Image (tube, rainbow, N blue to C red):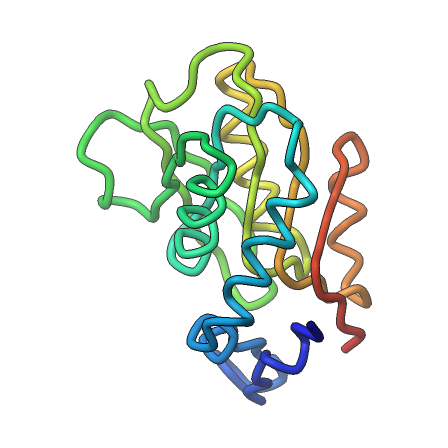
Amino acid sequence: MKLERHIRNIPDFPKKGIQFKDITTLLSDKKAFKATVNGLAKIFKGKNIDYVVAAEARGFILGGALSYKLGCGFIPVRKPGKLPYRTYKHSYSLEYGTNELHIHEDALPKNAKVLILDDLLATGGTALALVNLVKKFDADIVGVAFLIELTDLKGKEKFKEYPVYSLIKFDI
């Protein structure tokens, strides 16, 4: 299935000059959504992943479904003030601003095999923040995965020590 056909481009969102890749059109198509989850699961089948770690909000949709398919746990990483227990935090830059992510201090056991997942790789800021949070646990990051990669922005270069996977690649 050509998953890229299910991605809608929204110009100038969230600010002028950004070409936003809207995945809601993919998620609402049951065949495309199933193919997405199955495609990601195929990549990681047999890698004995203990946890999928993903950031809100779209990462939660893919992360929860992929965790279920792989038979592993899901760890939500959230924006400030959203998690009820003590957290580690990491601030980072986006292509259109700054943000901060939090993870519970007891989210991962040492040496857990972790897959980092996000919906989109642009400059890599969000996924790098996830990597930095997971490193606090001495976990084993087995890969960094994305539904979409914007290849021209070269975000993949920030993850040279980890395998990087993406189902859809766009030149912008």
